[in-house]
Amino acid sequence: MKAMITLLPGDGIGPEVVDAAQAMLEAVAERFGHTFKMEAHPIGGAAIDLTGNPLPEETLNACREADAVILGAVGGPKWDDPTAAVRPEQGLLGLRKGLGLFANLRPVQPHPTLLNASPLRPERLENVNLLVVRELTGGIYFGEPRFRRTVNGEEQAVDTMAYTESEVRRVARLAFQLAGKRQGKVTSVDKANVLESSRLWRQTVTQVAEEYPDIALEHLLVDAAAMHLLTRPGTFDVMVTANLFGDILTDEASVLTGSMGNLPSASLGEGTNRFGKPRGLYEPIHGSAPDIAGKGIANPIGTILSTAMMLRHSLGLDDEATAVEAAVDAVLNAGHRTADIARPGESPLNTREMTEKLIERLS
Ligand code: NAD
Image (cartoon, rainbow, N blue to C red; front, side, top):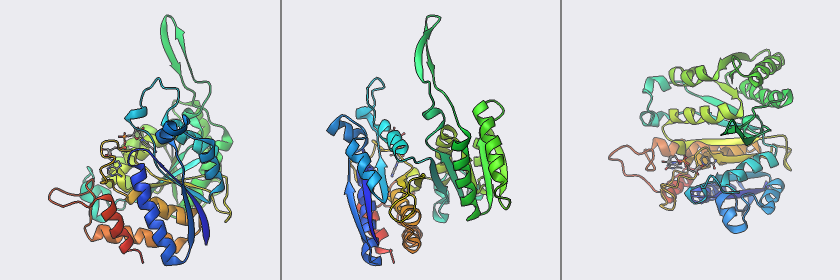
């Protein structure tokens, strides 16, 4: 296969983990006889510094032309001024919108050798294998109107949480389809006891469920879901929810695995690539980690597992994806750790050493 992959290293540890992903993809290409053309483009703070725009037209075009996109992370203290006209996060939101990526998939499956890295008791983590499907291009992050005004002499800020039936339907369908390939259960999370947009969400998901009679559906309010994620995480299969709720619940779910550094994600939408597969955006769930940026010690596993998701979902290369996942499994089973997942007394590997170990185990 000849595939075009656009790399968006971004800021902080982004370039460090994307370098690791690129090295892994080069190894996959060599071992399985593929050609991956990989080209890097600026986004986020790096793009603001270069062009004044967090998502330059050239970057967006390169993503539209690619078969898949790999992103590191954006943001950092240098661009944190809340009054600044342009911010790195606008690059990411613009990219999701520009590529029509309406669903973010975050699998959470704690590695058996890392159960002690989680703040939860190991017995709570037994059987945890869940997939959060977060709606990504609607809801309160994009709703209009949004503004500030003065009311009775004080400043007021307004955001809008809006969903259309079709926005809910397409992400719900994806959740049901994914559940069909897993354990056959969907948990839809909303705040239907308070929010009108959530009542439409629940009504639409319930209608979509009729198309999938073999899949079990449960509804949970988001406050209860936040609690059940910690008290009974092993009972969830696919959890589907709105943009804001998904943003919060996925960070909470990441804690089950001990480190954000281990977790991949895929953002999928309607656009297809030259292979008739979704032109997805693949990125670790962590941010730019300014506290460790430049030290070369970032954990590359989340980004490398994101490349496995890319191989599977955008390129249809299941064996190659499984090989990358098996390499991660083997390296963790062998006791290799980066600093974020090392226990006291264990000597951690740096990003480059960890990447080399992962590539060595690729078979
Ligand atoms: P963060 O995920 O960057 O870091 C949280 C903690 O986890 C830090 O202690 C960090 O060192 C550690 N960590 C994260 N990834 C790691 C890895 N791969 N290896 C080892 N340790 C890792 O979250 P934050 O500190 O809240 O945010 C920092 C910046 O990143 C902010 O500017 C934020 O806006 C941005 N951010 C970007 C994205 C994205 O690009 N998708 C997501 C979240 C946050």
